[in-house]
Length: 334
Image (cartoon, rainbow, N blue to C red; front, top):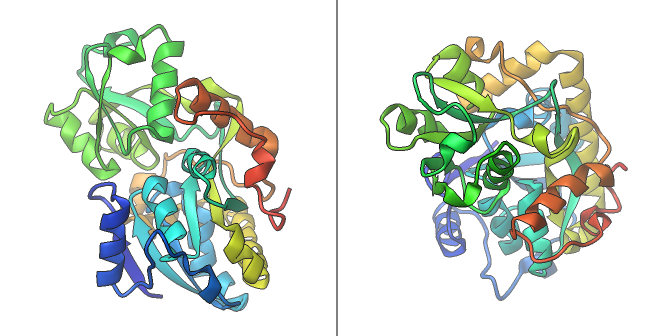
């Protein structure tokens, strides 16, 4: 598998920066004005944009168990900083399938991009599968959402899912999120920045919750923000362009089938899933023993998509609501 690291653990890329990096890395990319859908023929080679986080356990397992290969797919990996970079990359044609939080797809949809979810990614379930955490140092005087007012808090990207989950948690728990200063930091840099007092809190996703709080014991978790939004919701999923899907239906169906085998494998053996996460994130396996993981299911439910759209609209990350079925592919299991 070819691995192309674009922006991972560094900064969120602008569209122009991504296209330049993609060109230097030898990735076929077209400018924003001319999308390469006319060149997208049915193929077995697919470029996939992903993140090095625990939410992709089934995908990693499908790679390691050769489920994609068995389905006739050659997967080339592009590790990226988040959905805010992956969505433009897919629109440019640099990648064919992407992993993205749902907020980035909602934003792209309202901007006119034909993004469609093809396969379930990660579900947050309150109390059992909470994977976002608001954290401070273990000796911090900050004890509540109210205490975050006037403080500097980090998110991996601004005006996206981590950020809006933090805003909602602060407001729901007695604080005023408008009085908090937010900055962007890649997940691996958050705990060091906190310890060095460059920031006073951060919001992160696993494994960047368990490792600093339970393994290294550098941080203390104030709360788990996604569970405050709804008992269950879809965090992220795999998506394509509808135009690309129309020309590559068999490839899409093969990808879904292989990924679903990865979901079955993860659910049958959580320890193997965690070991595979360690391999792809570079963390030591023992670091992940206590790590919470999202729930992995095959169906994409409209009821799982709606809560985050509601919160994104509440905090003006999207300008209007729309029927969430508009961003679900006809090939997606529902």
